[in-house]
Length: 390
Image (cartoon, rainbow, N blue to C red):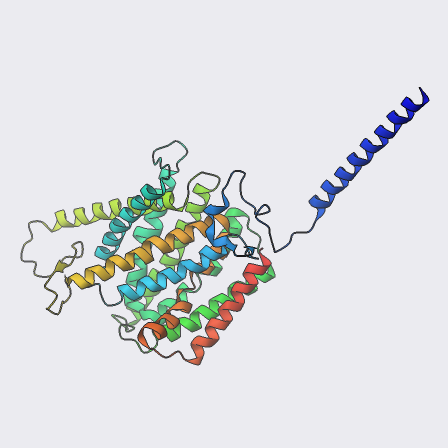
């Protein structure tokens, strides 16, 4: 009897010790300060999310020591820079026609990607924010792209980039107000470094190029150009903010969002073009290609003028559209869903850092010290953002 009581007492003591040890271990894990090196099981994803869905977050040794979505955010402007090199001097039509063509083509790209990846796509489901994404497409794609191109033509590259480089600061403000995103002195320092570096690199990448001359240099034309640039800044940021808010917490991925945004933008642009064509019907006597019409295809042996494009021009535009309007937005949307709005938009503005390097490799264009300084400064800003937001 005495032995039985002693065994029961020992069992109670052992059980109590194990319970206390488990409680201590649980408390230690909960109180442990966050680390920058995360294991595969510590990544902040929703339950049931496959890590293979985020290939840009992994390195050979595990997770990249940075904020989630950083790899996608850095690759997105690289894709844009590559695509712009294909677009360069190959489009001989109006800005509206380019906007319509690229949105129609990229809708096919998104549909094909969804079909290949066997993604379940339900555009008219009750959980799909179709009205919000349509509004986002109108603001950011239809109106935003048109104001950007119109401003660029009036101001030239240098003046336009001076306004466009303010987008990171504006988007950070919008993120703090609309989403309650925290703004620290480190994030402000990183964003300012990126803004200064991107502008310096932009001046290097456009310096001395033909086509940097605005259409008009009068005070009225310049004032209109600045208003258009400011409108693009607001419209583009508003489109990104609406997309982030509408898709946050849903099962939609970048491909779903891209198809709905660019597909609806293509339909809206087609409607605007059809209205323009109807308004011009009956006037007659038109000899130039109207703003709503695509350029005509001419023989490749001829020198194509405005309103005429060779097959080589069309191929370059189609390939460029894959990089500029499909790959870059897909990567940006991934980072937008994982990162704060201000940081995602800031990193999406890094295309001018890649352009001088690509021009050097592909065309032999020399990079001056201003471009090198701008690149280093922007990379310092990226390092601050990635470390302090991880």
